[in-house]
Length: 37
Image 1 (cartoon, rainbow, N blue to C red):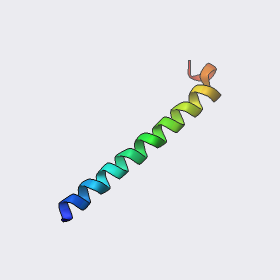
Image 2: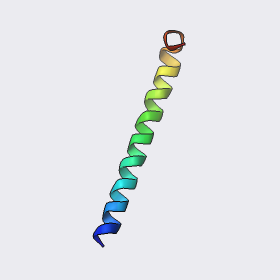
Image 3: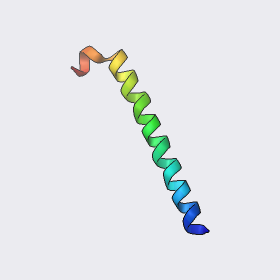
């Protein structure tokens, strides 16, 4: 039971990190496309 909870927690953390990275990437691409390129 504890291992399942750990797996779910890890999956949720990875999902949150992925969403945050996607939002940051989208903001940089739209806002600072000229500077980053």
